[in-house]
Image (cartoon, rainbow, N blue to C red; front, side, top):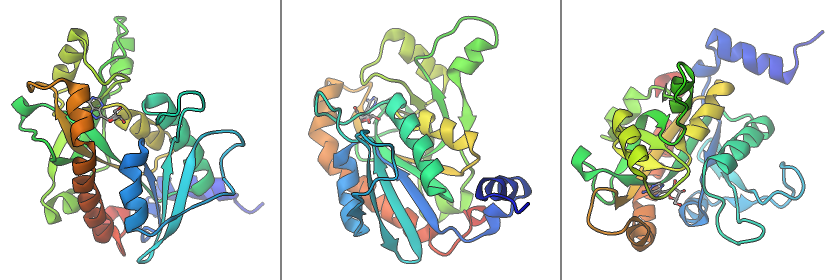
Length: 264
Ligand code: FMC
């Protein structure tokens, strides 16, 4: 019997041949519409009305061709009742899962905003390439479950990308709150994170389940250890920081164009 599409994809990941094939399908997972819109415009993508997703979900997909790349941007969309973006790990994980199944990306990019620690060298508008992720709000004080809760994992290594674009590299800690309890703070410090978001480690978890290389780009909207209240600073800087993210993301896509994952 001929191998199915799924069997072929899995064996290519195992024998490493997928990493040596030129990247053709890039999947962006982006939590907020404000973060996605400039990239949708930049890559001249169009919203796909006949969804590859199950009927009734709020998820939105934009697609198109940019250089030699097929680009999809998926967003969790607006909460059906409250009308706000479905931020956070649950939507991000579901959307990443469904998108991998439907679109078979060669590479996933999760681009978004984050809080940064100025004590660790972060400034407003910095865009970081993430080297490692972990969770800071999954406390399970039972041996081994504690490590599972933290869920630390290294991201796909992209030394050439980091070097060529002189990207700042740091660790990311993910949790489902914009604010931070003292317990979260201790855990973020233990994770040695410079930035904190609400989706990155969830996207990385799902990408890892299916062995799809993933890159995380995080732009700093607010300083967690600064003077201003987080929510206020986040909203104030969202638009300007998103344009910095947009610039770096375009450079990353231009760098990726024509390369294999192994060259990144
Ligand atoms: N803490 C956690 N998340 C964020 C943050 C912070 N200080 N600043 N910006 C974010 C990101 C999250 O990943 C969400 O998608 C959104 O912006 C805030 O709801």
